[in-house]
Length: 135
Image 1 (cartoon, rainbow, N blue to C red):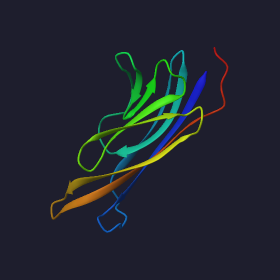
Image 2: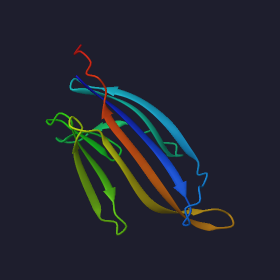
Image 3: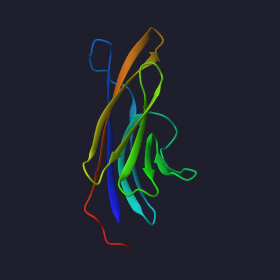
């Protein structure tokens, strides 16, 4: 059985590249089905919603912007938007090499005194752990 290990970390900066302390939460997740299992440590902007694995119609299972294909062992698809708002898809075979990717986006943050443009770099590291015996 394949076992994926996923780590997502965030880094926030202002438009000049200075670090910002933006409130985030760290969520740890363990999930498995009969084909594979996932251990994840995901840093995300603070919300009241937990991230969970959801089954898609017939493609496989999604965890946020990451899709694990049902019928293609080791294949994943990462979804992101470019600066123009166009959706981009990156397919990768984790059996060949780990998926290490950084996705940067800009968003607006409002305080009582200011409206700031913040930049969020999302560092994604997805790799396979040693195969575990089927149970």
